[in-house]
Length: 236
Image 1 (cartoon, helix red, strand yellow):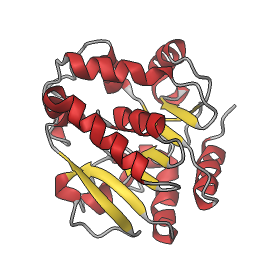
Image 2: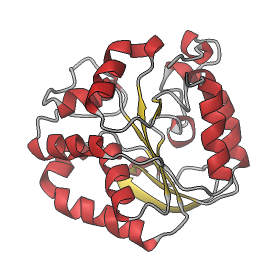
Image 3: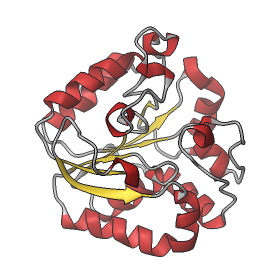
């Protein structure tokens, strides 16, 4: 049994000790795209994050490849039993690896701990996120900011080779570097391609756990201390 808080501190301890690893986060949207289905018009993906239709072959193919890594330092962060057991089972049936952790690792009842930990982080970070977040004030040192676009899925369909080559080059140029990646649905592809190019860095798909710093507003329920999601202690 993977304990929610134990997993959280396990990975923070690895970061503090400069132990390299990768976390690629998957939820229902990613699986829908892998299966060739679009996100719905009413989804939060569109309402909050300006994501557009993603009926795209190159994206599906690239996302599908990301499920094939089997390595003790490469973790698949997937839905838990309490939040979406159906999708948890579907991922476990399709991912070749058995190295799993929580998709909600840095959010829900762990979020306030993560938020405070970021303020104590002494390592520099390369951040890949929406271009509007570039000039924001972060509680840690940003070594480099790599911008992505609102309509990143359509961009990837047109420029996938150049984008992947850019990721590989960035990974190759660094060693023992910490990366925070928030680039749905490209984050899984970014983590996968960078790890394959150079496993001697730490690549983490942080999803929306940086939103309060990058967007300077509440974007998710778990960011409100009184909300039921902020109180949820997930069970794998």
